[in-house]
Image 1: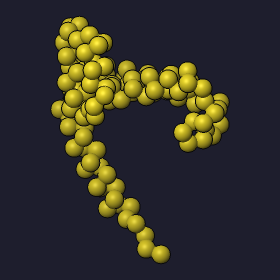
Image 2: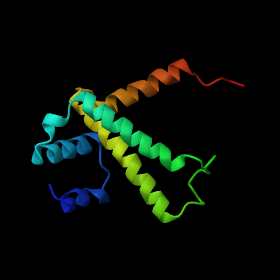
Image 3: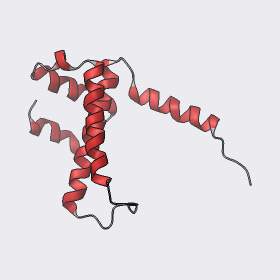
Image 4: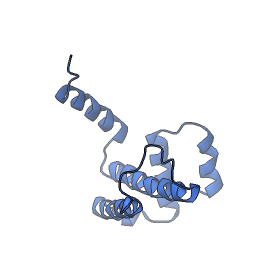
Length: 119
């Protein structure tokens, strides 16, 4: 899988399952599947969360939409967010979890746990 093949899908909406398939193809093409154990993927994701945290470290509160950030900083943030997302999707896939379904179930569970209070 080449970079151009991946970017062709960027113009349309892409599902978690689509990303999962692309990640699997990416790993297979490089013979990386042997390294993709749940433990290794989790630790890699935690490392990426650390890199994501560094972006916000010492900035204090940041306004929604990041109006005071330059494009380079926003691009860096997008890359780190993507790294976390990609490891999360790959981890879920390797563990046999349908992440989309699990997330929807969790939203429903939270709606029941935290109902809207009437005034």
